[in-house]
Image (cartoon, rainbow over all chains, first blue to last red; front, side):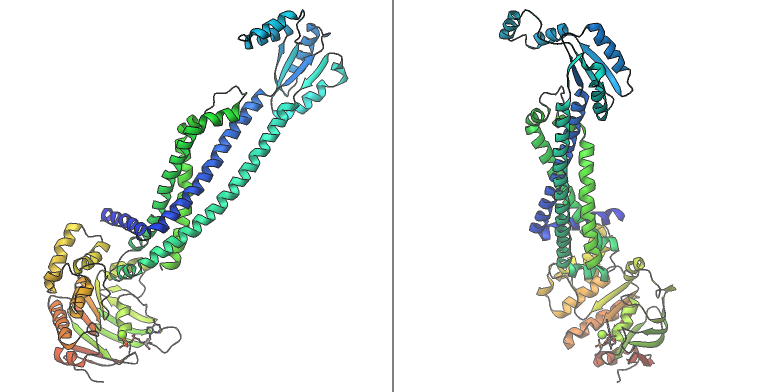
Length: 307
Length: 226
Ligand SMILES: Nc1ncnc2c1ncn2[C@@H]1O[C@H](COP(=O)(O)OP(=O)(O)OP(=O)(O)O)[C@@H](O)[C@H]1O
Ligand SMILES: [Mg+2]
């Protein structure tokens, strides 16, 4: 009994969808658009998080020592710094190591080798890299390095660059997020309005049937179910379309996106692979958003026009 | 058995449509309800199908006090009570067969059950050859027969007919009344609200006369007198 009634409710939901097919399609499109914006927001979030994680990991304070500073002095300084509670680790790169690394990186460039040979001495200085336990500690570490104690040994301290990048990135991300959240809100509202009217019109088109259903003893579920299910149907179609759009566009654009966001970073993060492995999260997020919008608006329409 | 105990119904602030109506209708009865326009005939039937709730008093159908019926229980009541109206209330885009099947689908009947039942009911109302005809291709009498057939879809114990012949000529009216009698003979309690004095007089069945919401006469084998 339950089975056949459920089947009929679903069948009637499809019938409702067809009765005002253009309006149903318009509703589906708006909802798809809304989901696309939400997915965009999601993608930006993932990319931004990954970017920051990389940058933050890489951030270190590069201390360049004067040529006059002895290695033993450098080791003492390193001990001092490494003992700090806000420092994660320290690493010394001697001028020889730096040169070797430089050679290795440009092994395929003969001109570099030529140029190096022409120099009698190693142009690269001794340096030390410091990674803080948290980016917020860099400020403190830097200022203590700038104190008189170290002045005669240290040539310069580099770190501001990455800090600016981080801040800039956070700012850009916040702008994109705010814009996307506002757009989600506006489109969500639009979805509710259009969905509400679609269901209202569907109820209006079927008022004769509804009257007779009541007359012959239809249950509340049998009468209201199709309108609720019509909105869920729209939600499901929208989720399928938006998901397809997401994966197709990420698949075609992933290379460029990865290049654009992570150039110069030591990562093999791939946004498409990420999306593929997080499919449950992506589809779940959409289902929650789409079905709650749909059910909310159709529920209100049903309460108002199907009493 | 249907019992009304001191039932009153007041719409809004108007004078009451029914006042302290007390009656007993045994199962299998055929009762005509007569009275001038506005006397409260339709109100009586609407109280029975829970379309309206009484302001005061109790209505009990086979031991079920429907006075305080919950909204979710109404469908179950409706499936035990068939209703027929002056304006048929058929779906124009559905054939006679589909109109009847529609009512059965609502109640969760299986397709096979629907096919056999609808055919049987169509035979009962003598419309087998019009099964696949649309309402606008039928005469008023035929339409009313489809509407009665639909009311019978759940094999109800009670059939409420509110001026079923109001839109029909004398001949068709007689057809409908004959059909109601036949349904009554098969065991269904029939309540017929009507203005048609010829029919009431010819029926020689119980007649309840209402006037301004009150019962002014209740006769077995009664006549139409106002
Ligand atoms: N929904 C309603 N709201 C307000 N008043 C109503 C409503 N339905 C009926 N009435 C009033 O209640 C009284 C009884 O109406 P009812 O329909 O029962 O009369 P009736 O005997 O069926 O009349 P008729 O022969 O014209 O069909 C009338 O005065 C009518 O105006
Ligand atoms: Mg009436």
